[in-house]
Length: 466
Image 1 (cartoon, one colour):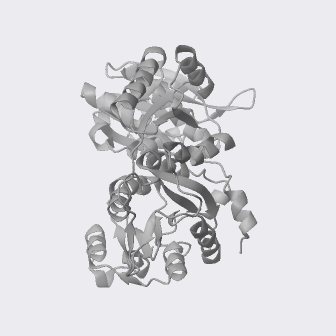
Image 2: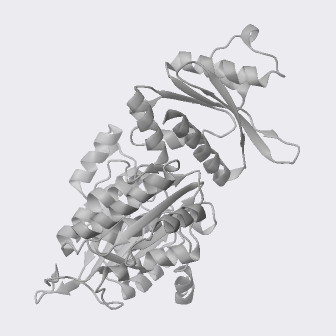
Image 3: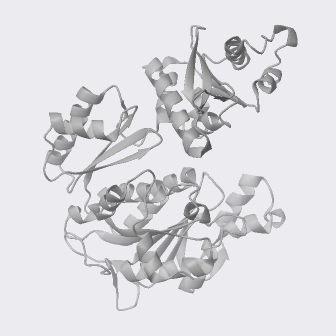
């Protein structure tokens, strides 16, 4: 069992790649949108019949909420918490104020303790993770037990499960079928990107929303399902005005210095930044969405375009992977990948992009270059000697291009240890003209090192394709 003091301490946890001050800034930004309620005050007002309806005021205050992130792997440092950053950044300009976020283990008693703490602070609590089919996925049961709301299979969710697996309900495995159980008081949130539906438990003046853990499932669900539901359930709040700018190949401090040097920025504007794996996001928020504030944000956009265009790749939620694929698509060209020393990290990153099908011709992942050569059916007689690694990569790139019909090919070779003890990878990039360029990239071990390598390679492609 975790103590309340422990939970309060965890409210200061870090978001993905953020410093403590940046994370606290995100959590406190809602107050700047004006007129927020006191701690614990609810925008949900019970009627005489005990039903909960949105309060009817001319200018309703922002809605306070808490976030509970579940997952032992987060507590062990295997992954950073990106959910808090995404949720707060998405809900902030829509009139929602985050009072705090905490991470807890995948145990019912820990989740229940977190819910007790969070529900004393706010009447809307968003829980992430633990809705899948494994034994460790206990969030559904923990929320049902905490609220006293029964779970039942939903016919539509069950039909969707049958369709997804092309299997009759009677033949679905129990661990899969349990994901169709939804609260009888509340609703469920559709998930076209996975098997676990989102859940909403509606108990008196408390709303608990549970979201799946994978970002590719959680993020669309927040935008397409949760927000429309909250608008219907609680009423739309006063909207703020927000601009997001995404950079790569430049540090936060240089962006900050450049904007201030060529500013000034409006005094009432709130802005914050996040950094992860060599990518920097700057978000600018003004408290009201009106023509004057939109003009102020447009001046910031033009400032960035004028002085930071070399590094600016998106002015919305477009990822670096999506941007590179968009550049290929605009040229009518496609990309193929062949990886040895990166564990398929580049293929996984690009393959998860929303537009991957239109511009990704294919991807191969092998344990070593000789295995990759055999996959590409390169004859022994045509294979260069072991001391001709550059020629081997060139041949792998050209053969991958022919096999897949891709205009561009990226081949990542095996990692090698340098004299200084650091690891590096030689990368071959074949362009649409057939020219093969070779790069040497640092290859730090671990997930973080591979993420940085992916960013550098995508940035190289971005610059070549512009």
